[in-house]
Length: 74
Image (cartoon, rainbow, N blue to C red; front, side):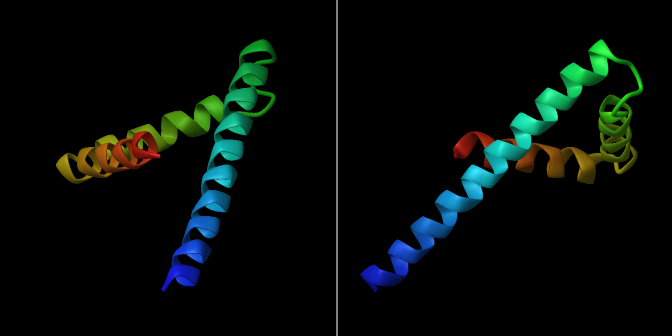
């Protein structure tokens, strides 16, 4: 059972690394989009995603909170 837990820890580490890299890329694209408007349209896309959460009402709010809790837990 110890080998299985080691594999899960390794996969979890890789997933965290990929997620951290993705967030870094998103932040970099936001900075680029602020400096050169409409070059990446990332801010527009983030706005669309946030609007979709808002359109779903309470279910969207719960999903957003779940994502935030999972992100902060790691």
